[in-house]
Amino acid sequence: MVRCRDIGAVDMMCYLNSPEHIAKVEAEGPSPQMRERLRVRRPDVPRREGRLSYTAKEYVELQDKMGIAKSLICTAKLWEYTENRPTYSLYYEEEDVYKWVKDAPGRMYGLAGYNPLDIMGSIAKVEKAIKEYGFKGVYVHSLGYNLRVDDRKYYPLYETCVAMDVPVSMQMGHSGEVMPSEIGRPMALDMPALDFPKLVLVGSHTGWPWSEELCAMAMKHKNVYMDCAAWEPRWFNDNLVRWMNGTCRDKTMWGSNAAGTGPVRAEARFDQMDGLLKDEVKSLILRENAMRIYKL
Image 1 (cartoon, helix red, strand yellow):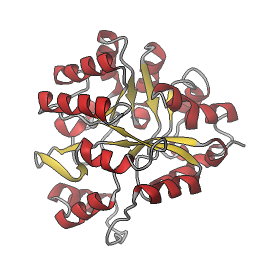
Image 2 (cartoon, rainbow, N blue to C red; image 1 turned 180 degrees about the vertical axis):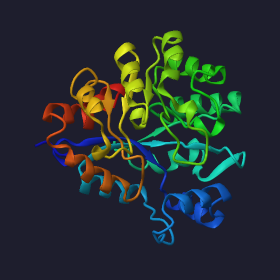
Image 3 (cartoon, rainbow, N blue to C red; image 1 turned 135 degrees about the horizontal axis):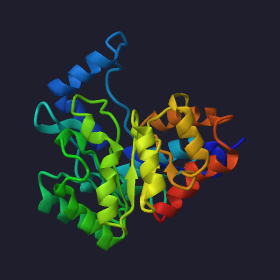
Image 4 (cartoon, one colour; image 1 turned 90 degrees about the horizontal axis):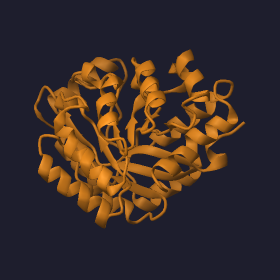
């Protein structure tokens, strides 16, 4: 039985949880959209006051406890569709991520963000983050902008990432937030994959409820990959498990999609995959694929 702690897993999708960022989030408080999201999703569950934060040293200690060798920290640029503004807790800058990860070399790496409403400004930040900060790629949360990932507003980012030889991962599937979901259909990866054959594209969250579309894109295109970040194994359908064990075994990565206690919960859940995924496949998904794709 292969477990995260046995192989030194790579968590390819985490978010900023530095003391400085959490203090800013707590001071600002949730926007109307985020308050509605919390009310609708689990109105019966009491919410813990405050959020955990970690220094870089403390986060590495958490990684060690869970058997996570390396973590990729996304620069989130989450846009609130109904409010037409940055979201309160998941919109921050590359410099904020760099200040956190630089104190954990070899254990924490940054991923730049992208705001398609500020193309030139975002491209400049991406280039700086990769050239000066050593970031390993870009993460895009497209749904709040109501722009499919084949929209031309993303093409300058794709051109930049090809030139800099780094992957782009993006939100795929439905939206858990109050924003459009249809634009998250993985079939939208088809044209970018054709137009940029040297660009590594990573569709996130299994693409549910269109997981078959994401697997189809990964099987069709040499440069399209996928991850199961945030997705509990008990939610994997039979076709997804079959493809992860088969054709997509070299194309799938794991991520917690969280910070703080998120890796703890995600690591425990992935260790429940026994009987679903083969041991050699778990090693690929938990570590080896991310090491190769992100050049870690």
